[in-house]
Image (tube, rainbow, N blue to C red):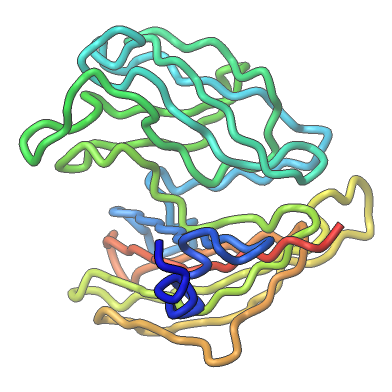
Length: 263
């Protein structure tokens, strides 16, 4: 690339291209198509697990998926997981799918999981053929708790929709914008919550506290923060929503700049 062109790119493009030292961007998208009248996480399955370090667990793909989503099948052949370990360090691991049976557990243990994506597929994806065949659920290795889900939801999305995230150790997270989409027939309330000190093992604990609140939302909105919302290391960023009656669909898209501390 011509160095003059590279240097002329705007700052955000430099970060996205990996040209900014110790900085990367998370476009964290969350969706809940059945938000009730009480606050729940804006995620595919209404869950964002937040165990303490002693509860770190291996994860696996849950039994009951589609037989084509297997290591040599036409659907998803593997899934990559992104989250934090018991030290608050960001980790990733690829898990081979196993059709309708449970997969092998991860070799690493997690206290947070904020993204699951199809890593490899047996199908060349098109507008008519997605990269997985069934819903893919991630659970703890004991098989007692669902953690995340990659849903079909009309078309195979190949990625989870988790509207919360946790800032890794030795990082600072800056939220520059939030896009909110809601069911226009309902009034929707959304809150952004913060909890610091996720590695605390005994009281006193840091509280969960409100950072921003959006009440009575009935149309899509986008909020740009001239001064980005700052979250320190080892902080949960939680997105919860509720609707005025029945159930309603809510989606949230956050742009988060993660800055790593110099070592």
